[in-house]
Length: 157
Ligand SMILES: O=c1ccn([C@H]2C[C@H](O)[C@@H](COP(=O)(O)OP(=O)(O)OP(=O)(O)O)O2)c(=O)[nH]1
Image 1: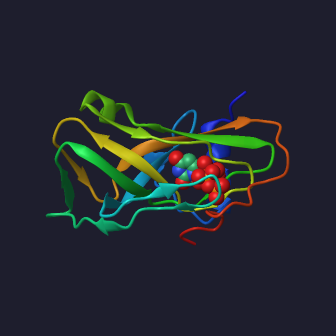
Image 2 (image 1 turned 90 degrees about the vertical axis):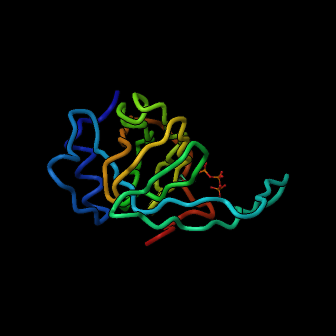
């Protein structure tokens, strides 16, 4: 069972997000793009520990990120808090897909709080305005064991 868009909006507002009306969707809340990065070094995932690759933040040109085909990391514009009893999923806006682009995202754990990131794949050149809506967060009811306590807790806050 998924929460309504207004419940998702309440969860985000409790985390400090200020939402425009256009972000409020029937089944979730649209997230905006705050920053786009290109990787500049090698990351690592070990059996223990991990390292996120260094990155270079792209500058918008005339307010738009002018992206050629490739893989980027985006930082979303809204602080998120996943309430207890919930799991979060972020999905791409369908307009990204219709432009041969997409977002790859992972599980958003109960108890996670922060400004998250995702992988943006660009298959066809696209201009994305800084602050534009690119994704949608939905929340589903879920049992869980404890709450999120990983390295990304409170990131960006
Ligand atoms: O696409 C996503 C998915 C999740 N998150 C946030 C919410 C999630 O709760 C947190 C940690 O995600 P995950 O548990 O997958 O991270 P990890 O790579 O396993 O690292 P750690 O073990 O430190 O949590 O990152 C994102 O920013 N982007």
